[in-house]
Amino acid sequence: MHSGGQGIYLWFLARELARLGHAVSVLVGPPYPDPMPFARDLSRLPNPQLWGKRFHPDSAVLLPWPRPLRAFEPLYFYELAATHFGFLPEPFTFSVRALRALVPRLRAGERFDLLHDVQSLGYGLLALRAIGLPLVTTIHHPLSVDRRASFARDRTLREALGTMEFYPVGMQAFVARRLDRVLTSSELSRREIRKDFGVADSRIRNVGNGLDTELFRPLAAVPRASHELLCVGRASDPNKGIDTLLEALRLLPPEVRLTLVDEDHPLHLARTRGRELGVAERVTITGRVPQARLVELYNRATLVVVPSRYEGFGLPAAEAMACGTPVVASAAGALPELLRAGGGGTLSRVADPASLAAAIGGLLARSADARAALGREARARVVAAYSWARIAERTVEAYREVLAERARGRPARSTTSARDGAWRAAHPAA
Image (cartoon, rainbow, N blue to C red; front, top):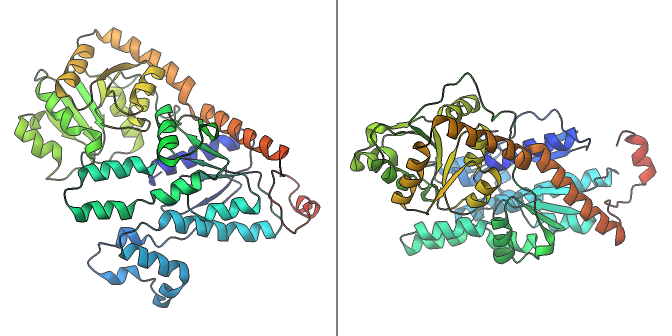
């Protein structure tokens, strides 16, 4: 669960597929997921994570100790060279390591109905598809979106060149166009994948993004505050719009306070900008919190505010609605789509403090009972649209489309020189 959104997606989707009766084999690189007892098997692929070590003052950390000569092995040498010149090698090298791990299993006679990539989109996947494996991928949003945001932040030519080097947009677009299906989480992302990656619309499926509605739920024992705003987001990311929220807070009555779930440090934007705006005393920064504490914060808050300038889905808004808490969000990215589905809040103009303050004030002016009714309706609709069980069902529908197409053309199962009967004898439960 510490591996970010893609790790959470992998863990929950695998669990729900297993609950539906599917046998799931997982191949994953670091940071490795929490235990997955529901998986048939789990292969932890190595990864030296050189990019994270690139700025370490001691360059020796880039070498594979205690066997430094391993740096001359082809894949490691490629990673070392690519990292040195500012490129991110990990999506490609992960796909190659996955290929290396799967080929011996296929040669031994093991069969897989389908391979599901989670947004690595490395060239190694094309070799697996050439072997005969039907292959789908999940793209929550194309890396071109992150690259545009990075260009917007760049202030020098050197920074812009670094952005061009870092994002493997060309590789991911090339691979995505050649896979059987691309799964995504919103209609906005669907349009961006079609436009930026050139994937045919007929091969993109919006299956939604999942939410742990068993964890994120109303807690009757947690009292609801009357004037407390909650925001979950990194102030260091301009796309999260924390600066807009701080300016909006200045326009709201002094009894309105903000709790920000973000890593804390002395130079945090909420402190420095908050002092300039005269609202620093009204802001609490929690630092990292465990999931159980986050659920309590969602339940205690009067409103959850998502002031982002872009969201491919908007997980904090969905989590808040699952907890029965109304949401104020900017009309950015997929947030309007999410709030239409959940019906648990209101929208403001993007990067507009006055509009955001007016939207917050409008919901605060309602009675506590009216806000509670809004939260109850949102909870029911979010569970129906975004529970992991529902996402898994939609994902399986996409799998079956691919397998049906393969059955009409060429065999859907991977083929190897091993005899199918021998494999079935060794795997009677498959």
